[in-house]
Length: 232
Ligand SMILES: NC(=O)c1ccc[n+]([C@@H]2O[C@H](COP(=O)([O-])OP(=O)(O)OC[C@H]3O[C@@H](n4cnc5c(N)ncnc54)[C@H](OP(=O)(O)O)[C@@H]3O)[C@@H](O)[C@H]2O)c1
Image 1 (cartoon, rainbow, N blue to C red):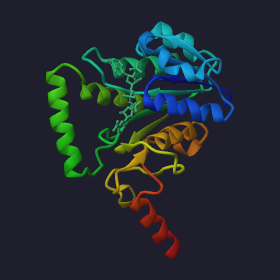
Image 2: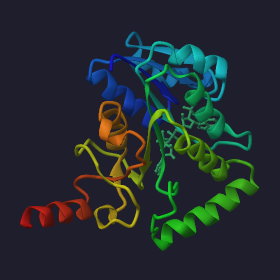
Image 3: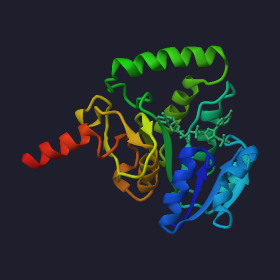
Image 4: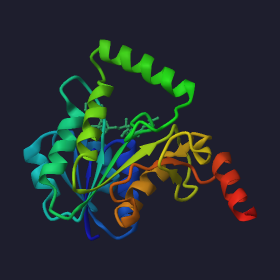
């Protein structure tokens, strides 16, 4: 992994991924909306930017050229198929053999075998309906984006984030294939560690074509799981 592209680099997750990628010595290029370029001033001279919408295929084609890995922040803004357009552009235009890592939330299910807490089901139902009615966010389009990724034969990983909190890194999150696994019960990850997991996934082949649901390694459920494993 020498050169990585971060699609959606100016958001909170994008900036944390930039820090982790630079710390590993990767060359970093990124795509963000033109109005958000100034958010990245602190990285001036250390990254290369391609301003544009993340579903703009011409911009994505330029940005991913020569990249060994692509980290994509999937967001379902608006009603113009932003998330699926972004995912499709990356799937179509990234270099052959590139590692493709996408972000989303626990609400995305690969095989329908996740068992969600009532609170999350209620939030997705209410927020999804209201946001769609206001034409602000289309959660269904994020589902469509991941459906296309899951159907792809590229080397993808879809990282599914729990609820997030700010704060310094605690280390690499734990993960499970399905929400409902006891190790994830605390449903809380530091945002910087979500980014750490995304960058880690670039070089972890065991995560190819997996959709890990993650949780902070210091969360009570993760610690309880680690303790039980040690006792056994
Ligand atoms: N609780 C949570 O927040 C949570 C939980 C689990 C998973 N996730 C996942 O985490 C990822 C995003 O997290 P984040 O911390 O980076 O969020 P964020 O800081 O809000 O940024 C998300 C991205 O959305 C873009 N964006 C914002 N408004 C937009 C608009 N009107 N049109 C187009 N793009 C717009 C931002 O670009 P600009 O910089 O240009 O605004 C940025 O690239 C998503 O994949 C989400 O599913 C979040």
